[in-house]
Image (cartoon, rainbow over all chains, first blue to last red; front, top):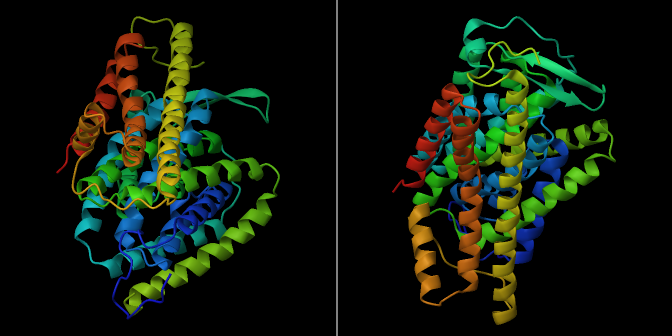
Length: 291
Length: 137
């Protein structure tokens, strides 16, 4: 790739000038790291694509398309293992998809710099969340009338404990509007925003960790579809860019899931903390400096 | 299972068995959608590479919504003009339709099998909003 001719000029708009092998390998890496860390590919993919000179809005559009693939791929396994709670997923999707439509619409009319800063802020938030991540043990709580009416409860087979775990969700009235916000971040920045969804499931709705991550995975696919359709209608999904990116991200995510079993959580966590903070500083710096 | 409200007209155990079937159905829709989509994109790129020695595809889906893209592809296919780029586009279409079909199947399942009207309404709302978004211009 050529050196950028001058500041503020986007040399590469749609990735047609970036060589295929480079797009493909960066996407594999993003999918790989995303799957290992559980944070999804977009959070690495978008900064990497913008570093190659691709316009941030196109990077967001192609990233959210790839999110459909990675989330559907992993959700398929969890659903068949009967860990995902379909009712919790379907109920909360009503809110995330509207959020995603709004978020994507804002991105379309926004200028570039606020998007860099917002992305950097989300990276910084993820870094903080990972830094202070405690290992709270899940315990059930009292279910309120509304959540009971919504039938948000269930059970799943826990392989580690060798038992069927029964649980009842709660506070759906806080969870639902919070999920609108999570969907908005997803549509706005082209990421799955899985970390935000898991936080809402855990802290507000009191779901067991396994149910909360797997159900978040299911919701992400539909949320990403709502966001993608806005970017598609705006003509921002470029098949030439999308083809290497979605193939690479899915391949990387597949490899990352396989390797996850063999690596310690602490090594993954330290590595990801470093990656997140570097990318956060870089994105915010570019947003403030004016690309 | 200590469910307090089994769906009307179904015994608790049967409801749970049906729920498990639904999990399996949803799981296979998602899996086959992603695999088919990846296969189409990969086949398109491979064909392009064998035909031209290059992997770059330079074109955009200028402001078309999903149904217009599908229509465009179908028209090309009917005209016998199956091209690498059409395979790549179909892969993207299949990928986008995967969660859409998952929701559509859920509506049918909640309505016809589980007879859970509450969730039939909820999933229908999701389906309507998604359909609307796919028709955006």
